[in-house]
Image (cartoon, rainbow, N blue to C red; front, side, top):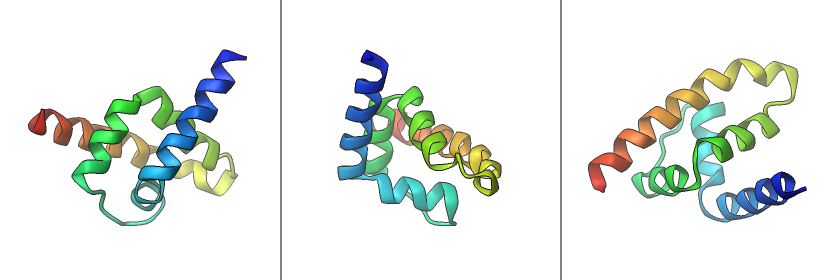
Length: 83
């Protein structure tokens, strides 16, 4: 139960801030603002993975999961440079 509540809370926070940017990077060819990278890293890798997996449960989107990991690596790098 607590896991579902934390996932719901994360999705509410990230949707209201940077979700469209995150989705644009993973499923399109967009870039992400550094501020959104910081927010993403603060939310954590598990929440990032949950958000993308939730969206990518559609079979033809599963191939995009590598971009999820690429985005995470990029944002950790950006966040560590600004910390």
